Length: 471
Ligand code: GDP
Ligand code: MG
Image (cartoon, rainbow, N blue to C red; front, side, top):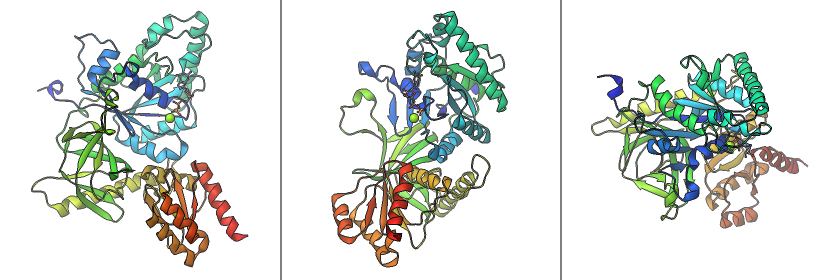
């Protein structure tokens, strides 16, 4: 048969761009639909991913019934725009089918826009440019949720002129960076020239255009890639400590089906960990917010989907690696070996930095015998911290690290340094709670707990702490 008859999975899309370009707001816009009226149209949100079923997109874009959409929906991955999160951006962009690069029309291409473009080029990922904040053009008349052509027709000659001028400027900047781009409805060579969709994440003009490009044009250019495959393909995005659940992993299921009770292997620095899926979770759609608990439980989930997995032994799973499912009759040892091959791939991926300079791997946190204790809410945060320290050439010796709230046990481990090197008897706690017993014990034993609230302040509070000892 032809490719048309094959079942397709949802395309996976990530949103990239410079800080403040409007990535989060654009994603809000994409998600929002009818939240105000208490309906979310089946959209699910979770840390990092949003699934939009096709019915929802059809409704929002007023798509006529006779127009076919070949994919069941769209899975959007949100990546933090902060500079120190470049590793997470790299991870997101390497597993997505398509990217949306958000550019602020009033600012043009910026540092992290270019960094994002480099990443996409390297991973061979096509992209759509969301030329955002068109409502900031002086005199713009908002046309909520309107397709961009319609919204533009409504504008004064002055606004239209400024718009054209800024658009041309951005197209030139893309050209200077080696990319041919064009306004999508004027683009006659969509296979070679990247599409630009003007948008406003404030009044949502152009959002219908963007959604339609994602579900109609994307399958057209990569139909083979989107053919659903039964073989599980699943990447760990994040490792999180969740109250009452313990360490969980957030994964992107790219292909196949995951079941409760599946035997799976995750990679850790200490080697493969084989465990059994206890629970598969997605957040409740917005309208079910009042439902008990935050998450919806599933017996099985089919790709493409963002999923939180509950199982024993996930604590040290490494983000960026694959989750391997052991099928009946599989040789466990062989599966474990396959799973660990991934580690090399991830590390080599992380070894090159965007500018091409070699930097050390960040997913493996180098520990040494003498150093401070670092504690963070997730692997991603931990990596961001390490990346930030490296970027600023700050060398903080780390003897131990852990995820989740600071417990008594962590303080006990940190006290070991009191006898070796007193200034290292400190816990750098980032984005985590400190349990009262832990705080009490720390005060008693002389372990210092530092709680900087931003990555930037981390260096300051650490150096301040060390200097106090030197004096
Ligand atoms: P991010 O850092 O790329 O995620 O950017 P945010 O989504 O956090 O947006 C940064 C700032 O720009 C916020 O104050 C937003 O309200 C604002 N913003 C984002 N998109 C738009 C837009 O389309 N129009 C206007 N006027 N403001 C926007
Ligand atoms: Mg943001």
